[in-house]
Amino acid sequence: MINHIQLDRFGPLGHIDWPELGRINLIIGGNGSGKTFLLKAIYSTLRTLEGYKRGNEQRSAAEILADKLYWTFQASKIGDLVSKGGDAPLSSMVMFDQKRFAYSFGKDTSKQISNLDNQVPPRSSHSVFLPAKEVLSMHHIILKSRRNETEFGFDDTYYDLAQALIDKPSMGRNYAEFALSRRRLEDILGGVVQYDEPSGRWLFVKGRQKFAIGVTAEGIKKIAILDTLLGNRYLDTRSVVLIDEPESALHPTAISQLLDIVAMLAERGIQFFMASHSYFVVKKLFLIAQERGWSVPVLSSAADGSWHAADLKDGMPDNPIIEESVRLYRQEVELALK
Image (cartoon, rainbow, N blue to C red):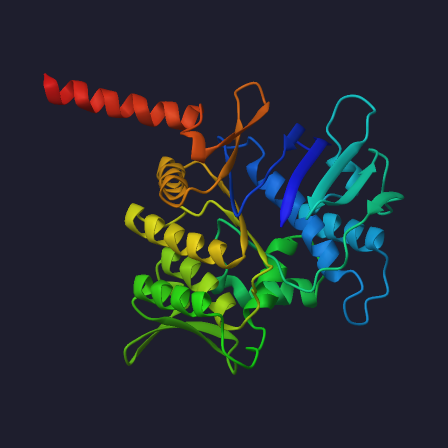
């Protein structure tokens, strides 16, 4: 697992030091605070280690990382990722099972990273980024835009996910926990989502009826993506899953059910990083931490741009999202008592 993340001057993220990470890790903050940016920074490191020395890959880790940063953040040069103001370089350090992957570069860097220290062996597992926007109805467009045109538009989190979704299923039985998770996901869906290879489109199948994915609710598509990645064995027990706004397009009951499934998968070995601004997500993960006795590290943004680490095992953290939810609850009680 990822044990520790430290970033300095990485775009909007001035300084982050997030140690003692767990099976499920939560990033909370308002719009524009840098939650998605942090997820993408983690993802770029993961995908570098998963591409390095895999198959016929001949590029160095530094070359893979530079390319991944370029296509994930879609900056004209990766030096643009360095925080504005001052000449200090961007730096990133991620610890995997106490082994270090670290790099740094300055604002004039184009596409070559010369300062990289990698003590982490190549990863054979796959990691995936689930964006807040749904992907299935745009699946064929995403693939076409990057395979044929190689232009900015859909970043690598979308392109990698689009490719992962059509990976052929591996042979053999799936993990028991993964199979159970799939059954519970399909209960939430009320059907299954299938890829129609001749047309290159996705369909939602409910009983004997088939529906075009474009007319299907966005919440169904989000849950279907996780179900598909478990079904085609793209994910295994050493995968890392990053989810941006798990609450997006889901009602509170579905959020709770989805996070119960996340906890089940985390118990089997998948590590999760989630970015959210939903009180429902924070509260449900707090309950999971209490019920299971787990550490659920949470990184919270403050109004001044600083970040603070806490643990849901120890209680709900101080944060404007929590404070606003409590304020609304108190207002509701006051109205009821009038």
